[in-house]
Image 1: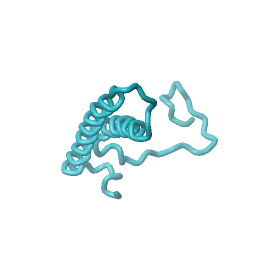
Image 2 (image 1 turned 90 degrees about the horizontal axis):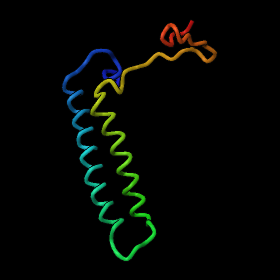
Image 3 (image 1 turned 180 degrees about the horizontal axis):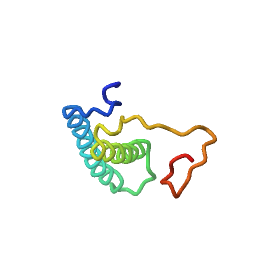
Length: 97
């Protein structure tokens, strides 16, 4: 994890993280199709625990998949946070004054 947090880019790690993102998007798409079939079966019914779980899987897979695919190794970049009572200057692009 220390290597992923550093500024040095490792192409293998980047490709692996983006591949996991693509895999998560595929899982989300397959789960969405499955959810559609579950929700449209007859007779009309209230959503059960299975359907709610699959819907949660779709949302989490979609969000995490796009984040991993779009950012890659940048997800683990360390970000410096300002102090607790820092005043941010909007003119200076949010840098503490």
